[in-house]
Length: 284
Image 1: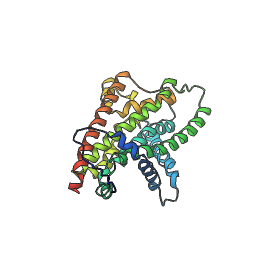
Image 2: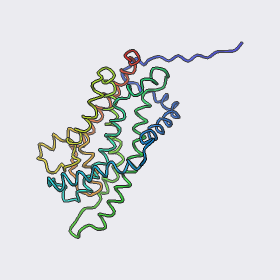
Image 3: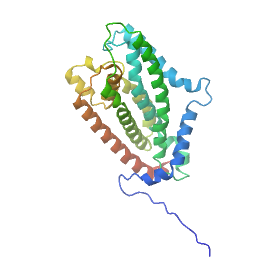
Image 4: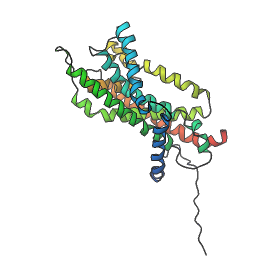
């Protein structure tokens, strides 16, 4: 007699239970999705991966002309182009992850309703694939930074902060965790309230103006700085500038608040995502 094996898949009953073993078993699928996200983003485009460079550079040029030249916005005595380009590094990665994960259920409905695999793999693939764009943009920033540093004026006293440089990977992980948490929360809510998938691009655009990407935190009053620190990205953007230039308003209280909010958002997003994935097939 031939033995027949059965595998029964049951929904999780706990509010939060990340099946790490299942994620590991489907690591090959995760790799394929990372490759798919990376290739599909600029497939059938003329410039291809060059868009990784052009998008932040063109945006930085516009910021330099509008905010640096026309409006005279302070840049903490740093070259405006470098100031804005540095701020675009963490913001660009955060916005890419949030935009890519914010409508996970809608963009993958055809797959989710037919094949089983850990649904968390899809947003994780976006988190990982967006790192490639960040690496290219960071290399571009390094070249521009070197040119400005060699040609800086004798009175310029900006230099990297060693401790902040060592903490850059930690800041990047926090930015990824925050974007993933918000993306999971948006996915869960938009599965029921479809208006959110139309509002997400607008929210992402507005988010840049409440994050010190185009202005330094030092220009705000002490009370306004604490209000700005409610945005978890604030210490991250300022931390990147501190690492690159040695100038940036990074206070321990702001960092603690930022990390706490990030963990809360990530937990809430994971809980909401896991609850939504149980009933999503019934609402399609």
